[in-house]
Length: 130
Image 1 (cartoon, rainbow, N blue to C red):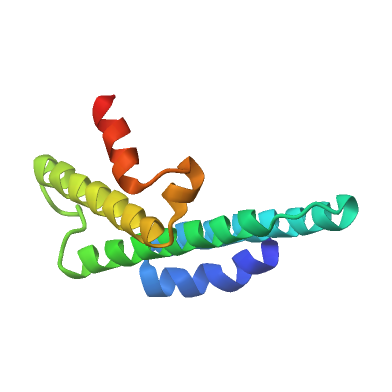
Image 2: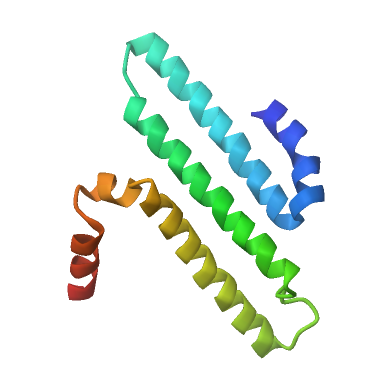
């Protein structure tokens, strides 16, 4: 974990700014999880095949979400130097965009459907019912 953090931290901050630090931390945590699961697999002969695929899809969704945030910052939405109202509006745009990009990316890879064992239409109907 420490090696991954050391290698990725400064590069990702240079490329993505503060979200690079967050991504570096996520990659560090991911590497620790993978190492621990590998140890458990060897020690107890347990298969994590489906879990690893889901973990990779989640990581792809997070990277896509970070890419959307980078694009928003490139077009000038950063919340810095704005009034409080504009900063809140920009924060809302970041939040809605992040959730949308993450959901669309993971839905493309069938993650919500696999976790909930139902189609996206059925998930949407259940959410509407409350």
